[in-house]
Image 1: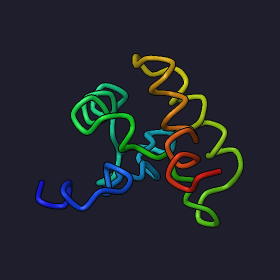
Image 2: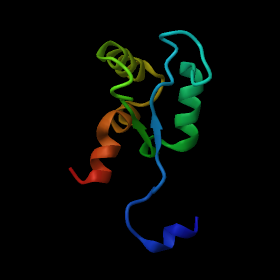
Image 3: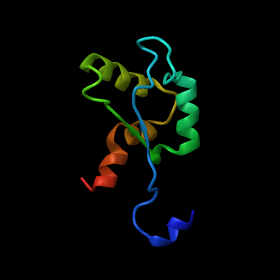
Image 4: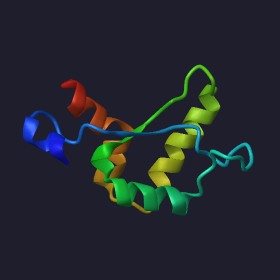
Length: 93
């Protein structure tokens, strides 16, 4: 990518995974666990950020999704990155 020569934090494009749950039934945004694992593999866990979609989703939905990500067939490091590690790094906190 041409932006890589500018320095700074890489990557600069992130995937925010939110409202892709099958908890409430299948719709146009639904991703199965297998599809989500494939996309995370293709885009890199350091480019993936879990999103709450608050206030549109309630606490029960958010808890369900966090547990869903913890159960995915991806590395523990990937889970940590997606569930906050990447965002902490980008924000410098």
